Image 1: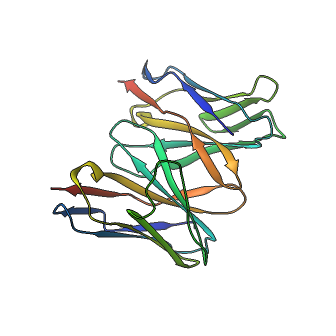
Image 2: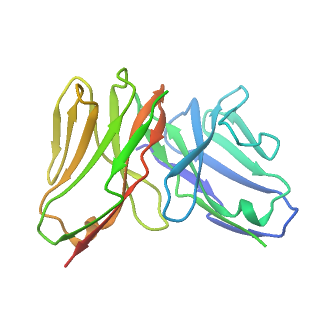
Length: 114
Length: 111
């Protein structure tokens, strides 16, 4: 149980284009999902908290107009990187809040912006 | 708000030896402390967690200890094996199940 999927696993795009990443909880409902960014050999940096049916809460320094988050159902949250630039290249990981205090992570998406 | 510090950042041990990773936290109200293992290019996996009403929890070769007074908790891996090599993260809750993650410890088990 508690499986979280993420799609796509890898994406390469041209600078200026937008990329959408999907995060799904497959066998449980997640009122809250989280989006993280991880640089090589670094820790998980929380970008935003996605709440079903309401606006996401962004961490300080994260541009909400650049990283659009939608949590339209209890099993799906999406992160859209708009007008991507090479500095947006990174490993993006979502997680879904499970029972009690736990979080279950998706497999991550490797974004490369050329 | 919560602040979590994790040490060491890198750790090398011989196969069969023990490894200990320590985290300190700042918010005395925190009551749940998970440990995650992340292999290269993969998702973090929850390996063990502890709640503030107990001081120690063990699962086979992995254990976590919690000292609420000193506000630190530690991961103990005994009889280490090469497959234990990975990056380990501790975390402490900010609010609900939103976490503040430690900076990570890269563990290498030398065969």
